[in-house]
Length: 339
Ligand code: ISE
Image (cartoon, rainbow, N blue to C red):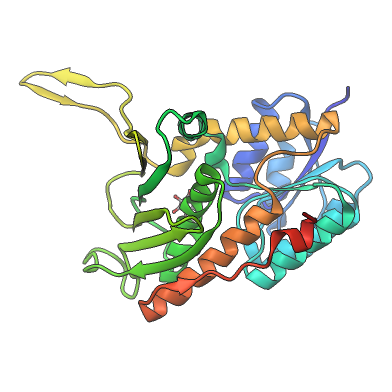
């Protein structure tokens, strides 16, 4: 079987990482086309990959007959048009979060894909491919812990770019715990409240940080998430499920433990999400490539997962403004996908 010819759209930090991953770590695929609004950057990346071309217009790159599948690592506001083009040309697409930047357009994308009757879209919620999250999910599904009741999470970043605002803490960071909750519990989130504790004096002016998100699932499970994106320390993502018959925790960052004189012990926290979730991205890409090549429907996070996450984040941003719990508004899944 010949290699999957992939177009990577957007070669900023994540896109360039994905180009490198597809080129040197993933089998069965090669980067055939790159595109970026910064043409020089695209040229520079293409020059390092044998047989890789630059196509200046992202829609032309999607339509190109020598492109079998697409990776979108472009800015969120461009996703809707690019996803619809992938659907129109029948090209499988792995889209970095967000699916689109608002709930209405996300729903439109879900509907258009459903009309095709074939899954072409996978959303890049990479945590589902992390071995610790996979082990936690398997443990919950095995029933060993009984019914899960509560989820406690911490999501800490050492720093964020200057453009990061308070709503992005919800839409860009919390969105991962939103997906993790839906993944682990197999149910929708019905309400969310964002609480604002004392602000970190080290956070940039105007950034509400930390934030605490309190969510409730359809069956009544409680989820709380501490979001703190300017810790100045390192990258920490911890997740603990408390269930009827015990609890389970991941993300302790206990790799190598060093013991040195005079009586010290310690280890290292991963510096950022690219290091912490590097192996998860690798396995996400390999599974996607394998599924697309073998003609099997992709089984990673779907357009619906992207839409549901967008709806929860929308309610979260409303709560950030009002301080009150906000109900999540979702259309019925069966009305789109069929029962
Ligand atoms: C970033 O966009 C990510 O996706 C990271 O996983 C997350 O930890 C970070 O807060 C986001 O800004």
